[in-house]
Image (cartoon, rainbow, N blue to C red; front, side, top):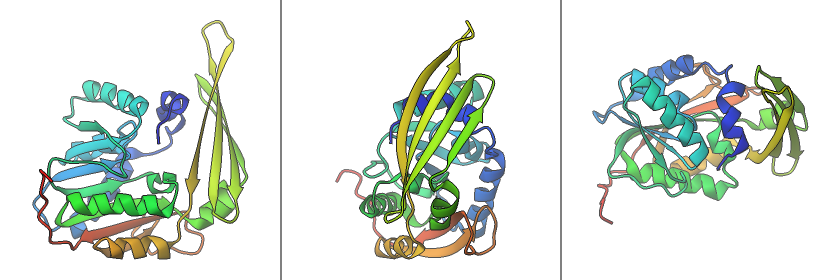
Length: 257
């Protein structure tokens, strides 16, 4: 999904996300289950690179992939400031291409929910399996059906920072559990007036049964399923589920195919 207005304000409006803490959490999962020597980590839907830079700092060879030019432009600016050697690719995660296999694939911050339908989820998992090292890890999180029904739902949220005021309006489809999101941004100008811009996108909730069936179909073995950023199993009111899976396909990737 491409962003325009949202990209300009993304880091400012998500300043509450502790990327260092989340990165260390994923690092612990990797240490727990990793059994390959391939240290390349692919960060799917990397956005402005928040997780990518943390994982690079932890010693991984990181490739960040996103299909938003606007998001990646910000990530590249941050790369130059940080001095970290993260590669960024502008590609759609449903049909991405790599030059070889990766040891770890990470997809964080409910990016799976941004996929429009279950077939798109299957496409992402298929591509991930294709470019994953045999025994390589696939770690991802997703918002739950509970969160869509009870937290996001038809609610409106407001956010205010020094530079921007944001009104976030949700509309829930109770059948598909798709939440359509309308964001209105009011940016404070130097003259004291405000300029207005907007963005629209959606998130869809997928059942654990659907996700686990596709993981199995695409050759992944589920190693763990955690509630939130914990190491405990998910409960009925869990808002985010984290999956850790291992690629059991024994293919040898033909890069020239």
